[in-house]
Image (spheres, rainbow, N blue to C red):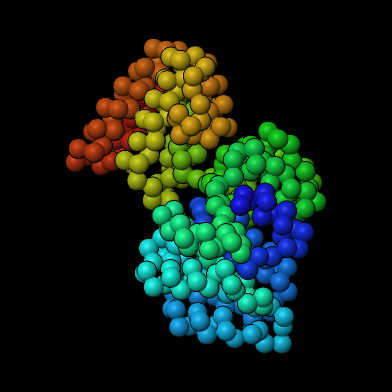
Length: 322
């Protein structure tokens, strides 16, 4: 079952007897688990959450009707059952999943699922659904951010939503928290300036800002960011590695004229790629070549020299301005 099919069924009030939820997007798994609980109308007393598999305990739970309620919900979370379970455990559920009591819904939540458990998966599909929750695509995230902002009574245009997403880790919990913070701050139209003032940017974004400051020959901005990263106890070797990667990516875009370069090929956010294209367009080939060579040399020195690493990093930034 796809997420869209699950969304339609739950919003229509249809709840299955069993669900296998797996994937990297924990936010959506939590959302749909909560939605199923809401549709069942179960209270806390009739929700059982377990983090390990015990067949005898499971048998007792399945055979015990709900108390003072029509339904009960059993949740197994991160037990490893769908990835590396014992044969007797699988046999128990393969036998019971197709014939669960009407009063119970069982949700299994894991990060991964072993597709070789075909009989178990088939048993789940016979009376429920197996759903993979992948991280949202960039357009989906943008649409979701717009929905969140509107729910908070604000508004945000597409470019600003892109800027917000690019300045957050790929974690919907964090993005939601930042949206709530921004809506409390602006209470109307969210701007890029609001994001700069309120959103806590990941270290990788701050390091890219150093790259841009070097290209713009702006030592004040570069050293101010370095000072902030030093206070946050970021490692100079890690900072240098990202600076080197940024300059290499800009060089690749410059040499390819940007046509064959995609976010996937560089491993960057689409918004970050648009900024790299801007940087590649205005920097001279000789300068970006020099920065790539110099950053690779400095990266090697940082990893092998006994000299204070922060001093070496600051010397690199200073000389890179020339």
